[in-house]
Amino acid sequence: MSAEIDRTRRSFVLEEAVAVLARTPATVDALLRGLPEGWIAANEGSDTWSPFDVIGHLIHGERTDWVPRARIIHEAGETRAFEKFDRFAQFAVSQGRTLPELLDEFAALRRENLRALAALRLTDADLDRRGRHPELGLVTMRQLLATWMAHDLDHVVQISRVLARQYYDEVGPWRAYLRIISGTQG
Image (cartoon, rainbow, N blue to C red; front, side, top):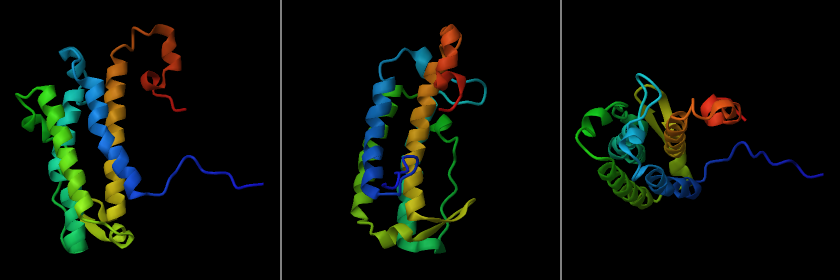
């Protein structure tokens, strides 16, 4: 009898993470481009983000978080702490812009950042190098890059959830079968 494969977890493989990271801009573009403004500005209540806000947040991360922090780990290790990340910077930075502008900028920044990541030519030893997060303490390059990918998927889910929940009342009794609306796991 063969050992059962755990399909709930994977070990980090840089090329696999990059494959997901490369797809995120097209995924959110396909979900959002051309939708009426009401869908783009929709949220889940006070102090929650709209799809527009999420794209601005992803852009800010491309500029100030993932690759800049990877470079710090690569060049300085844990001797230099990361800059603190402003999780709400998108509100000021995105003001007065259109969603198509943001989607185009996100796609361009992601292409640029994936090229920069490839240029680092990270080895397994590099993936184990540690950096210093201002709140979490010591983290590895592997953890940073795995988080970048998971962060993307977290926001794809968030955008999908915000859009689906707009029809919370409209789906009627089918709500019980729709995990994205009901919040149940499965």
